[in-house]
Length: 441
Image (cartoon, rainbow, N blue to C red; front, side, top):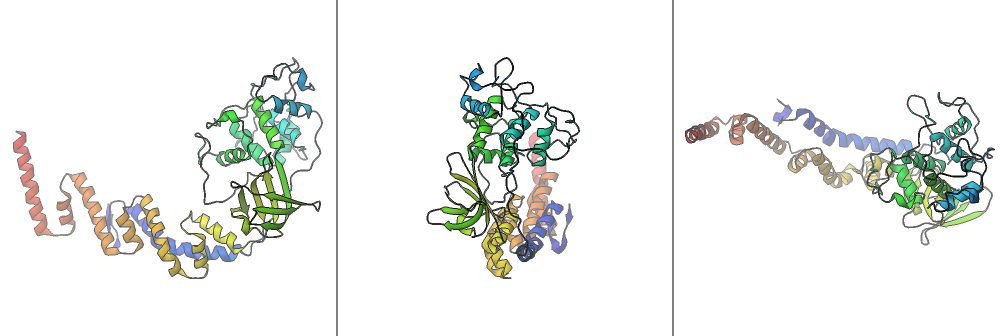
């Protein structure tokens, strides 16, 4: 323990010093950073959304290593499967097949290599480069793995391997499928979605992908509220999710117009036709990777709409010239909600006083979350050094009292160098000590 300047005595000098910097200097710096971001970001170009792959499909159509051909009606173990329709559809399309013994084995796990082949076949992705993983050379699925790697759909492990024969987990599979429809890139939003599954929280690496897949409706119903991210995915589950993703509808092109009253937007496709989509209550809209509303989209924006199998838009991604609204929303998100978009606009105008009053309650809340009492946080934000010093002394007195076993009043008197009061409290302490010893005899 040691004393800080201005007589402020603390029990956690590093913590309180850090908090002081955050509350006093940090807030001023946040204002300058916000203004800088506003100025620089307004000049930044925005890249157009990438178009999906239009490569031709590869030849051969088996999902299992040693299987080829085989119509759905010849497989004797899928008739009663919950995923029968999905399995049969993918077999008919030449995307998957059964085993030589006439079975499909729907409950068998799928390997990473097998899944790479299924996805490459289902979405017509062909390789154009060399293998990037050390353990797939001469592997039967090398071309498929390479194709998905180049498309940014699969990634290997930190040691440079792909582990093609390892069973693919639910979390891995869902992440790859979300990448297929280009929804895996980072989207910023102040609103963190409530977890749909009890075992996939916002801290999990696959949280966003799982929530995206859930919103698209491509997850099997039997997953319920427990996702089991590390569980190996079965062949039936794989067929169901891949078929569900195939049924997803993609609309992309230039934004021709928005009707906020009807909740619709009209997109001019690359072929010149116009398509109108109607947003639902749960449609997520992003512009330049920041959550926004339909009325913020601009005519001429590049638009990418992902709708579920029923045709209801679930995700709308737009990109175009960066606007002031984009920047203020981005800075607000960077401040983790401490600065509202309106605060950022005020800072950009240099109107600090307009922000300060509304900002104080949020700063106090953030400081109390770090361990300060509400009184300490209020004193710190309002720069009431006298009160803050008194509060800090009281905290130190309480800590010393607990450590030394003497009353906090005596410690406080000693810290204040009130020797007369300290003598009185000391006499009381001695009397209590002697009385205690006598009573214990």
